[in-house]
Length: 247
Image (cartoon, rainbow, N blue to C red; front, side, top):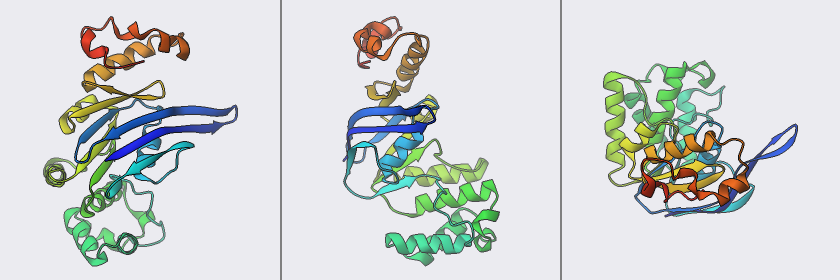
């Protein structure tokens, strides 16, 4: 179980703090596959890092049981001057996993045998993504978190990546944050939408997209007015489904 309790976060600008999201409260059952539809600029990546424990919220807290991954494909922890092999080995030591096994897995799965000896700063974008995603899958987790990146490569490489993720998810949960409703529908069976700074449950990614579009069309309406006028979604074709999204 992962629970977010009154989680809030703002970004600091020259004009002061601008809220990204506020008062988010939600629970994701163990083993569930949760898709969060979040448009650009909504705080999607920040929320992913908060769920993983990489960042702290400004207010509220996250309760989690079991091991949660870092965002899949996240390479922000690589030291630029250390070799890829050394980076992976150090991470293994930090999290209590056998360094040699992680190195061997990433080298073979990501086809990174040559890149292992290169400083992280010299890796190509393709090598960097392959290394980060391979490392994400190499470490057993109770819940995997993905921020847009849900695989890597093309053709055979992508099919191999997708197959291993599917196998991991036979015994683990997933929290997938994305702007792409089709990707969410493919991997998830419980859905939420990050809407006007709030995380709202919704029956499907398509319903969430329609709600986002309707909200965007009403940019002249204040947040307080949106809260009072829940019929903002009533004009959609699936009225009953839209009633599940409380604006």
